[in-house]
Each structure stands twice: as structure tokens, then as C-alpha cells.
Length: 168
Image (cartoon, rainbow, N blue to C red; front, side, top):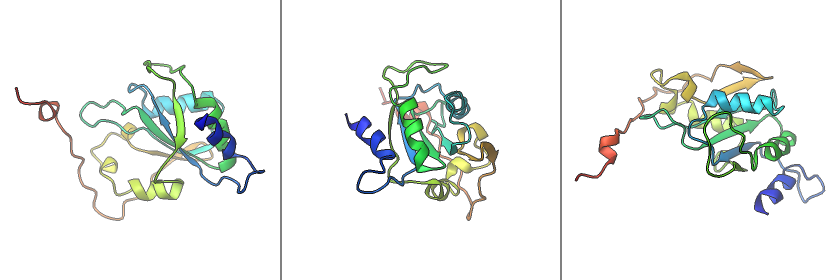
């Protein structure tokens, strides 16, 4: 019920105000799904050229996804297309999720500008971080460079599995 209200509200011009949000969070994704695999799925679903940012956060110690992603659509009018295609989606090309994908609004960062500002000086953009772990930007369906940082980027902190395990 909650997801359908959000999906219908995303393009409902008859409501109080037209929806202006463009960034969604995809949850319950298999951890094996990389950013590039998600881009391929978005394109196969007919969304090529309709998004301008895709980011699948990863665990720096394992390289696996964290089970969620952010996608920013170029226009708020295109959000319902993504929402209806991916809310409940479970046909991942690799890996299997226990639950179908759920789509929610991204909070607190909303819109391309907010995400660029959030990540341009983030450790995820450090030169030592593999490109496939970084947010990808697009213009008319073509990958474009991320704006340069405005300050020195710190190296990411990688937590080892040993450090996370309790001492026995």
C-alpha cells in the first residue's frame, strides 16, 4: 500500500502539488549486483537515457554491494516508470535476493546536485577506489566524468573482517 501511494503520487498532477523528487533508493537488492549490472538492468527495462546517476554502495573490504542503490532520474515525470518496473522486481541477472526489490524516495539527499555534492569529496571518489564502486553520472544516456573534488579526498577506511569479529 505505501509503495503504490508513492508511485502514483510521483506523477499525479491532480494532487495538491506535482512531484518534484527525482532520486530513489532501491532496497533488497542482491549483494552480487554491481553498479554496471544495475545499469544493464535499467537499460533492459527501457530506462536508458532517463537516469543521470547510478550508485551501488559497496563494502570496501569484500567488494560486494550493500544491498541497496541510488538512481536519479532526469525528470520527475520518469520516476513512475522506474518505480513500476523495479518495485517488486526479482528477476536479477545474477544473485538472488530473499525479498523482491522495494523502491523508496532517497532521503536526505534528493536530486542530482545533492548527490554530486555528497560524493565529490567523499572517500569513495579516492583514486585508489575502483571505478565500478563509484557513483556514475550520465548525460543523455552517455557516461560523463564526475565533477572534480573541491578539496583533498581522504583514503577510504577499510575495516578488516578480523576487526569486526569478537575476540574469543
